[in-house]
Length: 262
Image (cartoon, rainbow, N blue to C red; front, side, top):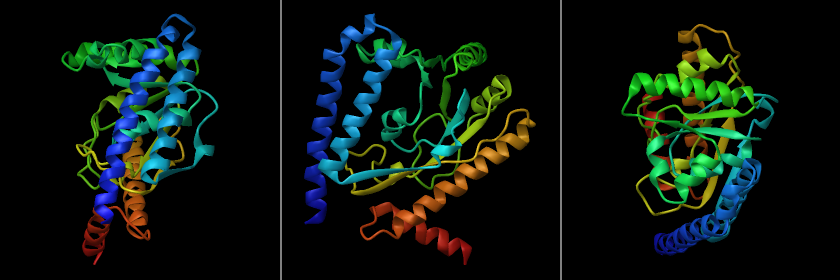
């Protein structure tokens, strides 16, 4: 019965989510000719509305830990990526985020136009060397404006507990920008799984970790960032498994961790 109710609530939320997204883009099209700051406020409003819908319809709340670790000026946010939830829900956590996205997204009508308006950092993945050079130049310009550069370091969504697959692009950004790197761990994939329409009730936790200061050797910076993200992400999985009504995958993953420790 519980799984049936979860399924129904998920279907209602998905309909509401895509409807709200489409309507906000349609009725907010005038923002494309206004200041970028107005468009960013629209993006933030969209995230807050969708988070409210997710809580009211599906019982999915969220908690943010470590806000004090976000620097006052420009920084590089190196984020774990488990779910589509991450792509909108992280936006309100920062003052003026510039997100590293694949350039193909700009081909989507309305959505792509807004990506350009937000002045995110768009990467052509089919031209590796040229794309890296352009990404670094663009990110430097955004950082000079005091914006937070947000990158999903594994490049695509990965299931909770999956073997890490960090791409070298974020290390190149760390080296080039000379700003603090802020690791960000989460467990969103337990509650909003990739390639699934089901939304499981519970509390998504985002944990912002202490920054890695600029200027460290690449290998050391990479180790510090990845170890902190992975250790915290596993701890968040274990926390979710101990909840009164844990999401299905959390218990299995936590049991596997316990088995490995034994």
